[in-house]
Length: 241
Ligand code: PEP
Image (cartoon, rainbow, N blue to C red; front, side, top):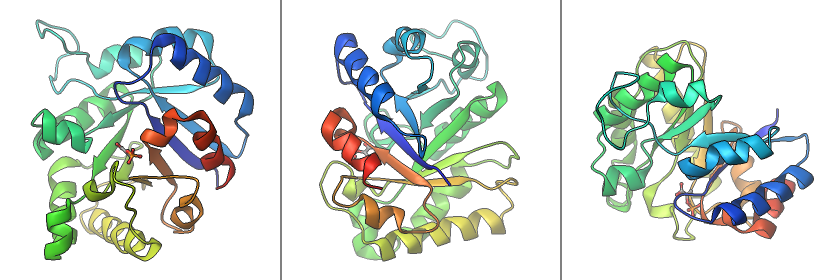
């Protein structure tokens, strides 16, 4: 199975810098790895035009049900799909924390993606308080039940413990495995994703820990933040898998 490497550039890079990085990714990537680049929305179309063999994703979609309308600043999943974009990150912890997104918002956004033919990459994961208190599995279970609807379409779930994002602290492979199995169990028990799902891990992924993370059988790939902006480190990650 090819591993999936999702690069989340967040609100970083100039268009020129993004083009340079894409050129290098285009030259150096191998056929064993599937790469999805979540670039700033404004850059997706010019990049897609130049690098037709790279897969680009948006970092968000509107929660509004309509495809068009008087919703200043919004981009519908339908609009993205019309431009040939196939994926969108939904419910990243930064959006939950800084922009007040709830599980219900995430659910609406994911449904809009599925309706439009986009694959949602739904992010979830506990914070350090849940982890210390020991109720992290219940917390994740609640996130799943309130943010994922029943579907037979393709869905990617990104397990991203908030205490690991941008901190350099990474869960052990045993800890990842425990959560991965729990996510699978809840989804199966509630019959949510009829055709299965891909589970990726995100949080301080680096060339040092990539082997360990991908040694967990339930993990199909990784979501990479900071390290995806560093050309050398990004290559080391997907070459060192
Ligand atoms: C993220 O923000 O989704 C993320 C995984 O970031 P980092 O790799 O920088 O921890």
